[in-house]
Picture 1 (tube, one colour):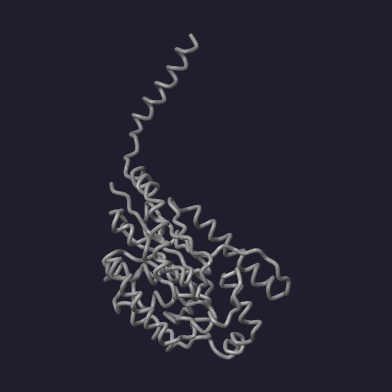
Picture 2 (cartoon, helix red, strand yellow):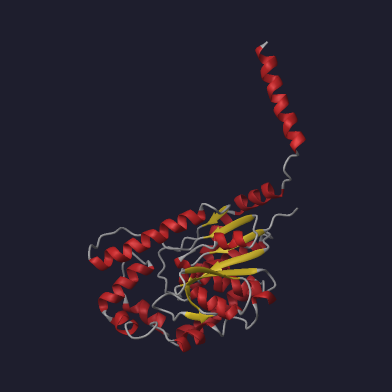
Length: 316
C-alpha cells in the first residue's frame, strides 16, 4: 500500500514565502505528496497550492500581488519601517519594540487589532480562491487557535478564505476571525509547524518545513521583555517537540528576515528551493522505506532462528 505523504508548511509570516520554493522543487523533482497541512503563512501558501497545484503559477501570481501590495503601502509596511534595525527579528521582540514606542499599544488598547477587519479581508481575499476546502484538488488542512474556548482548531472543510484568514490572524496585528462561536487567531500559537494536523489527516510520512526565526540572545531585563521572552521560549520548545514527530525537516535559511518584510519575495522563494534540494536524498530515502512492505512474521522468525543457530554452531 502506497504511504500517504503530507507536506506540513509552518508559520513565519513573510518567511513563509519560502514554501513556494519548496513546492516548486517537489514538482520539478516529481517528489510525491498526497496532502498539505499549513499554519499561518504556510496555510496561505498550502491553501493556494491545494486549490490549484501549479507552483510556477502561484510564484508569478504572488509576486505580482506583492508588487501591488507594496504600492498600497499597507500598515504591515508601516510596522516594518517603524522598528529600529536590530539582529532579533522575532515576532515577540518586534512587539516589545512597538509597545515601547507607543504606536501599537495606542491602537490595540481600543481596537481588536492594528489592522482593521476590512483591511485584512482586502489584504487576503483577492489572492485566495473563493471555494470550499472540499473542492481543493489536494486534501488540505490548516490550524488556528480559538482564544475564546482555549482550543486548537483544525480546518479540513468549509470556506478556504475563512480558514486561511483564521490561521494567519497574528494577535494584535490582524483581527480575530469569528466562526461558529469561536474567536480564532494565528495557529502558530498552538502548532507552528502543523505536524499533528498532518497526523490527524492520516499521513504516514510527514515532511515538515520550518521557516521560524531562531531565538536571539537575551539581553534586556525589563518586565515586559521577560514576559515576552518567556512566552517565546515556550513556543520554541513546543515547536521542537512537534518537529521531533516529523520524518523529514526542511529548514530554509530565512530566519534573519523580518516577519513583515515582503519586499524580497524572490530570495525567500529561492531559499525554499535550496533547502529542499539539499533534502531530496533524505526525502526519497524516507519514502522508499515507507513503501517497503514489512517482513512477514514467519520471515522474521526464520531470520531470528538462523541467527541463534549461527551463535550455537559458533560456540561448538
